[in-house]
Length: 290
Image 1 (spheres, rainbow, N blue to C red):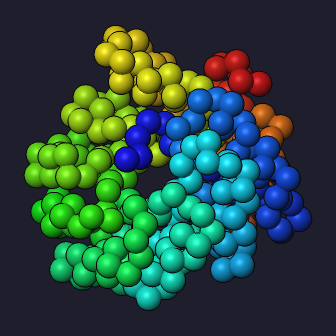
Image 2: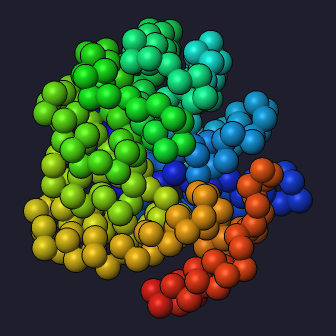
C-alpha cells in the first residue's frame, strides 16, 4: 500500500513556533522531487516536543498542502496505548491516509505487550497503520515473530524496520510474505533491504535530496539494479552525515543550509556542534548541494 521513497519530513520552527509557511514550501519541494509519500510528526519531525495542538496542526497543514497528490502518513505513536488510539483517530479525522506508530518507548513492554498495544490501536481505528521498530531510540525490539502475528490484522499494512539489521528484516520478510510490506527505516541500508524484498524507505536524507533517494528506489523497482547500486554507494557518505549527531539535528541543519528553513530545534535537542556543522557543510559542498 505504501511504497517508494517516503520522506520523514522535518518540522520547521521560527522563534519557537511551527513555521507553517516553510512547512508548506517543504511539502512542495518534496512533491516536486518525486517523493512518494510524506510522514509528518515522525522522529525527524520532532514529534516528542510538539504539543497536541501543534501535532494536529502539522498533520493538518501537510494534508491540506498535499491535496491527495501523495499519501500522508501521520506519526501517531505513543508509549500510552490510549493516547496512541486518540492520536491515530484524530489523524484519520484530519484526512491522513495512514499512521506510523513507533513502539512504546521507556515502558519496555514484553512482546505480548507490544502485540496487544498495536492490536488495540488497529482494532480501534480503521486506518492503514505502519509499525515502526527503532530499538536504538525506544529500548525495545519488535521481533519478527510478533510482527508476523500483527501482520494478520487487516489495518496493519507495513513496518518501518530501523534496526539496521538485514537479518531481522529478512526474517520479517520470510515470516510475513506478502501480508505486510517492509520499508527501510535507515537510508544507508535501503538498497540491500530492497534486494531482500523491502518496498522502499521512510527517509531522512530525502529532506535534502528527494530526487536522488527517489532515483535509487525507482531504479530498483524497474529492474535497473546496477543503477540502484550506484545510487546506494553514491549516497552513502551523505546518508551517514545525517547522523553525525542525533537525528534530526544534522538534517535540519542541512535543510537550513539549503535555505529552506531555520536550523532551529527544540530543547532538549541542541544546535549542531560547530565542528560537525563544518563537516556537514563540507560534505554538502562535495555533493554540490550548496
